[in-house]
Length: 499
Ligand SMILES: NC(=O)C1=CN([C@@H]2O[C@H](COP(=O)(O)OP(=O)(O)OC[C@H]3O[C@@H](n4cnc5c(N)ncnc54)[C@H](O)[C@@H]3O)[C@@H](O)[C@H]2O)C=CC1
Ligand SMILES: O=c1[nH]c(=O)c2[nH+]cn([C@@H]3O[C@H](COP(=O)(O)O)[C@@H](O)[C@H]3O)c2[nH]1
Ligand SMILES: [K+]
Image (cartoon, rainbow, N blue to C red; front, side):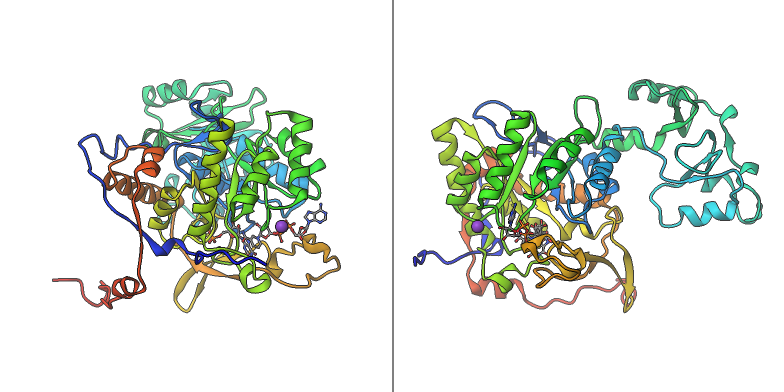
């Protein structure tokens, strides 16, 4: 038995000191681009993202819809692996079917549908246009488009068929499937269109280009896309069915894979990495983890991990510390692992990025994690709160909440865990609950990014490596925690509008 001398510390136990801010430290100059996969020191990583945020490998979090929204804002999602191989591969393929600037229609109806159906379909859905196809499916022949602005309940009966108000394909300007985004935008501005349907050679609707997206496209100039402008997406794998799952995900177009486990320090992970290396060489990138110390980092880096994921037991739905007594404060884990990562880079000339996973309670925790050595951050609770995540939104006691459950909870039915078998899992290792609803990802991620940039500006840096190198952190005392807890009641505008 050995007891480490240091106490295990969390991200809340540190704050940053400001460094000298110079005139070049402006939001426009701050670049949060970060490496995702291993690379030679001094060379760029083959896969980089402009926003250092990725979504957790969880059923309640990472759907194709969330993946597209997150890639648009410069991050990347990881499609969860607690589903059969074919459906996970289909989710990956669905994301790869989206090219930046081109939207897949999410809603389809047959010509027999009514205007009332359109109102009901679009309510609560991010897309406000519906494609009319001969059989009402995405594969059907495209007949026209209808949006909620094409009719009004005072003028048009909800029982009227969509064909009375849709814009028929004959009357629409359309583009062929091979059109480039810049040509599509030229057509939109030339013909003053709000929407440009893109059609396959067989008259199917491939996608639409929206004028409204033109602005967001210029706003999100840092979308995560591959060389063909398809959105990037990651996928989780496990150490049991990887011989079948990895080829299916690679074929579906996954940009990166990540072994999804609470504990990465195992021969199963080394064997999984070895299988992928033997089959694909360096073409397929697989992250591994999770780890909380230098030994485990070294083991996975030597085994060829593309990046190493740090964090055991810190997640908001985690009960690993309670069930197994395993874990470490996220700050202590990052400090130890980042030292090992830097030593590994010096010794081998290879930089292995670190992902900080779980337990980030506020946006500033992300800044602390990045300062302590993380290259990017994986978040579950944060993304589960948004419209784009696949979990249900519910109203309880007047509050809007979204469901959120752990991959080790009974709800996840992760029966392969610990070879528990049978219909029920023997013990749970995660919570099944709710988180406060927080609106749209595409509106909230830019706010988080703005805060991160503001932190870098205060610390006098314009890039994450410079921020990490120059960061000065101080431990926070118990007393200062109590001081920030001083009670101030937040204004409720329904009771006091302030006049
Ligand atoms: N980050 C965290 O702190 C935590 C995360 N989780 C999440 O819960 C889910 C399940 O995680 P785990 O329970 O760690 O699942 P896991 O499948 O990695 O491990 C469960 C058990 O199976 C064993 N095992 C793995 N591969 C094997 C093989 N090929 N043959 C025989 N035994 C094998 C492992 O050693 C371990 O004892 C994941 O989604 C994970 O991310 C769960 C708890 C904590
Ligand atoms: O103890 C656990 N039981 C679970 O059921 C579970 N499911 C996910 N995870 C891990 O938590 C991370 C997300 O954490 P946050 O919600 O704090 O972002 C995730 O990224 C995982 O690392 C779990 N941990
Ligand atoms: K272990």
